[in-house]
Length: 156
Length: 290
Image 1 (cartoon, each protein chain N blue to C red):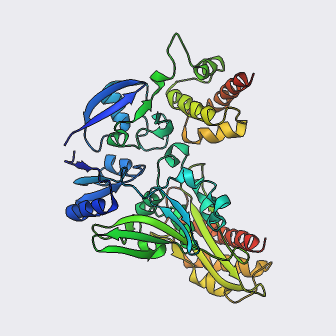
Image 2 (tube, rainbow over the protein chains, first blue to last red):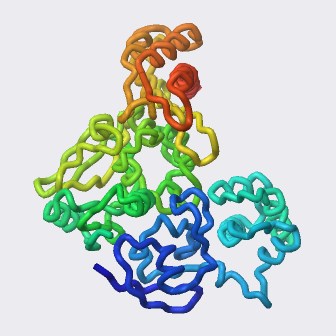
Image 3 (tube, each protein chain N blue to C red):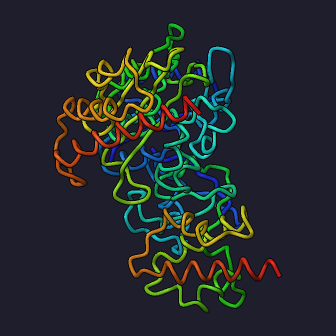
């Protein structure tokens, strides 16, 4: 049986219908049509579907859509725009922290939450933050450098 | 796909009524971090999902003379560092930051982690070592169950129809002479452990072992009590007695007969039990004598 789900995604309001077992990831991708949030393992391991719900990082494949009812969601589409990149997005490009790009949306949101909570993270802090984001191209070193560069910029 | 209803009670009594009404077809959703996977894989096909997201009164952490009471909806992230404010919870603090990753810990709840009854749960092992109890609310009132009796096997608990786990109580103990610790070995950061061991020790006035508890995770469906290891130590000198602790490790290893699993073969897990039991005991004794 379908239930109404009301979400604010990237400051836009959406009203859709979902089954109770539909995940937030399915609501975002299939219900709303925002496909920047990636779907890979669907098992809570890879972190490609990471979004923020009311400012808290979550793997959207592990949250039922209805659990996010009336909440505010930030996806990669809301982080920056092609002509107005978020500093983290610009830094990922500059440091070559993107290869196939599938993990990138999740990694960027994880990096954003880290900097929101801790504007001056150490390399160790960044590596710990990325525990839940798998990258099979292996961009961890470049991504860590990218986050460090943004942290440094904000310090100046 | 299944036909499923989604209900959102706002109180414990309302949740219990709904759980009783819908019987075996009802499943509780707290943080959802395990339930979403069970639903997708078809391992759980409930007729009614009972979300306790809007149930109030399950998010407090309170300390009293009896112990520390933790509401079922307290998230694992909130428990990170709990050993600093509530030193009797250090063994729980040992494990929460190793559970999965921050995304999951942001929403995973303590009650959910216990009720999932995953055989490799470090949380259940640490709480068992701490003699924790869980409080269950139901249509006929509340009852309190030791956590070691609550988790009855892999993914199985003693919660009856219409019962909701509302809080976890970790009893007080004298920090000057007792402590608990947890040691685990995992293949990768964020993974369930290959083996986890929780240990609790209390010392009498002359430094002998007054009480001890050794609990082993991921070698059987529910956490296992290494009674032979406990018997070897109880009443005996254990501070600085490396021989006794090594023997306890061997006895704990002899207590379990884990199955091979994709992470490790049985004999590897048995070796780990021996080493981790000794290490957990050493750490607990170090804390109790610090």
